[in-house]
Length: 486
Image (cartoon, rainbow, N blue to C red; front, side, top):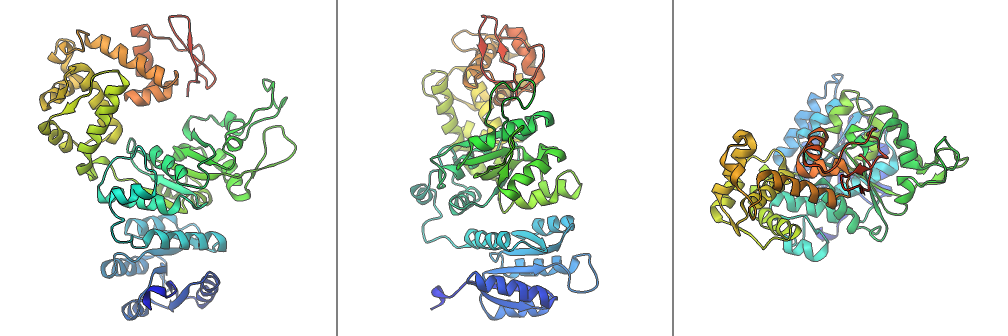
């Protein structure tokens, strides 16, 4: 029966040695294979029998521009849009691979390849491309199988992301999450961890752009007593803390090249050495990374190591921006407004239908984070149980230049002025994030510099003499918020 046949993979390459090597690897992994020397033969084979995956070279003549491969990819995508294609590229031709992925390829690998990594890439690509059983595409069915707490929405593009999370969560495969700022990459990392066999252990989250080069090894790998002047005791690093759990490398695109080498060694060898230690330790972690930058383009420009990129992106999850799933905005808005009201101890609030339509029509360049900030500001400034379109418009006008004499400045919560509301919001954010300046600034949609100015103006604290990772936020009441200036 067709349903019990082995999965079939088509190899398209004009090099017979490549065909033989791949066919042997695939046979050992339990797949059937077909081989084609050129695009014409490949398209003929695809028309004759079912294929589950294509491994495709990018050049079939003396020409090495890759145009032949891109044309073949376009033909396959046009005729078989659901058929995943993995591109084969020569080491160093990353720009061509980027063009291929932009044209619809599922992923790519380089020649020569690592058999173990390629087998894992093939397996996970096939799993991600597998048609969902009848009825399981609904959000309700996915929620019955997996825990996606905190991820709100039912748009088909979001459901595809959730399906992929469910398929790859229980593997060891490293996952790269791509998406604009504010679209929920950390929530996806949390969901991957929660639905994995490692959920009983820690998920350790690190902002890679916030670690200075001088502290990278100590922060990531730890140090032993006496390793340097201030090393009074042994200290665990992030890798040790995440042992048997998940290491979430946020903003991985901000990591400088010298530290990229150090991270690569850990991923390659599965070992690390604390600063000052005489022996290596085993690194048993599942790596999930995220960035709002296109890593492939950073590789092409020389800013990011190609070998590290391959280690991180075995599975790539691309989150759609909010403007590409507008039907989810009413669901998100209702959920967020409930959370905000509860957070501030306010009565439950609703959003009028016209206001929901207005919210759904906005561009939201800051995505879910910007939507949350808009809802939070409006609820606090208006103080009504039902938010209307006019309320959002008035607050927006004030935010974008209304000035202290604008109508927005007269809006209040139980008689509070705008200045008082702002002070209340900042104080609440400081409490929520234990004084962590980077997180407070991110939550409020401010730069750190802008937040410092507001802290000083409202008498909520002052910057320490040295804004280092180890500093604490001192407050006017003589206390201190725990947490570094990260």
